[in-house]
Amino acid sequence: MKPLNDLTLEQKVGQLLMCGFPSQHADEQITRLIRDYHVGGVIYFRRNVESVDQLTRLSAELQDMAAEAGALPLMISVDQEGGMVARIDKEGMTQVPGNMALGVRQAIRNIPWSVLKFWAVS
Image (cartoon, rainbow, N blue to C red):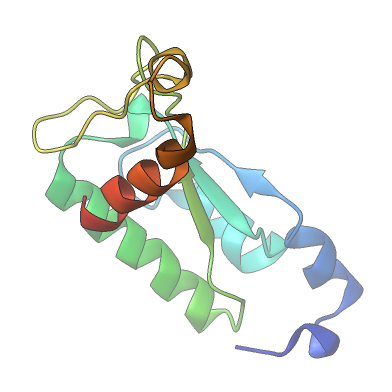
């Protein structure tokens, strides 16, 4: 992994991009985006997820691909708003409450800690 100062302008611009892709495996599209365009992040949608194990393997494969290309680690995210918008709803994946449910809780000041704690153990 290169220090930020050693990245080319093209690599720095690529780090600003987060891209989705259509499959449940590292297809030609995402491979090219990582290797040739130096994208900094990947976002998963329902179409990318089959199971917890598949998603774990996919994430590792994408991170390995970025490392082999000499890139920074990818920022991997999920289009998951919580509550009614639960795109990642496969068995074994913990559901996150929506913002409305979080907002109506009595102990407002404890919400950020409880959410962080939830993500840490999931």
